[in-house]
Amino acid sequence: MKKGVKFGIIAIVCISFAGLSFYTFELIPNTNIPQTVQNQEKTESQVQDEKTSLNYSEDQLANEIFSKCYRNSNCMIDEFTKISQTESRETVLSTYESIKMAYAKSDLLCHSVGHHLGEFLYGFTGNFSESFLLSDNTCGGSMYHGIILNYFKTEIFFEDKKPEDFKPTEICKIFEGKSLVHKRWNCAHGTGHGLSIAYNYDVIEAVKRCDEFETDANFHGCNEGVFMEKIQNMLSDKNQSANDGLFFPCDIVGEKYAAECYIYHGSYIIVKNKANFADSFMECDMIKPEKFIGDCYFGVGKQGVLYRYNNLIDSAKICENGKPEFGFYCIKGSAHTFAEQFGINKSIEYCEIVNESLKGDCFMTVGKWIYKLQHSDEQMPEDCSNLVNLEYLESCQRGFLEMMKSFESKTTHKT
Image (tube, rainbow, N blue to C red):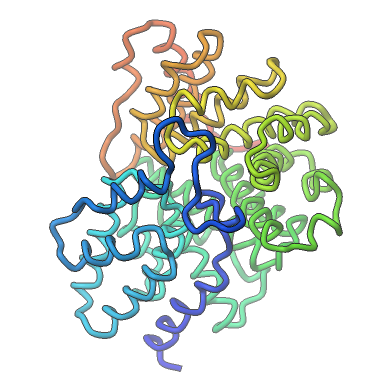
């Protein structure tokens, strides 16, 4: 089969294998674009519709596609498939860039469509490093993850690669160096997604391959990718909950992998419980050993923000539904989502309105994300020094240094 034809086919075929993303709420019954929960002003649908009526790009073709599809993944890929057959390579890539910029300006929740765009891009270029360098943290870095997913699927379906043939550290080796630290982390995270698929969602075997990463940040990023992909698969499998225990697979994986698993289990139960935060926290409270309860709270806070669509006050109230001693984990999870999905400034705004006793943990999370984003070849976010309050500044700096150590130090997870 010709290379161009192969990649063209995989770009289309992979859409049906891409799974469901937490960040779209496509799992909520009877809704195409999810409603916010108890939003005092407008539903998310109204907000999204207003945003898509604006022009976020000077590229007319990109504006037409964006206005037509905005968060509809299948529509977006259909449109890109059409122009890839009629337009020049330069036009397709410039349109991709314009669409990416439109999402960045619009503040839309676009994690799922970002996965699909990344898959398309790799299918179109057939070049892993080029695709990665053409992408950025727009849509929470999901374009990176889609690129790697398509890479894994291409190698499995067309090159007959076995799980053991993939070399995680080799895949991400091209992104060594501080200037590419964010791409390197996303590569490790995306590799976790790919490993989960390569091992047919056998996370016990898949997550062991994350041990091959040398730094703590990449090891944990890979773990997160494995479990995120597994949880998405569980949510799409109607028989999954009947076949396995309440905390599967987190209660059967090795303890050094369990924290990341319980984070995504928190995201899983908030979707499963249809945004009933009290019930979700009660489920977290049942976890044994108890040291992983906080990770579950983190996951609920991380996912819960998206049910309060970009509403700072409502998002902070989510964490009041659980036990107070675990509240700071929930706050950190919410701050994580604001930083990842909406940017550093939005996460700072969030931390400024949470309870005083929780601000320190919140600003530590901001500091971690400042490090992640600052050491990239993308636009530099505001740094900790812009915080006027000395206590918040110190918390932010601690988070920054903690994340720097995680990226630069050799990991101890192999011992």
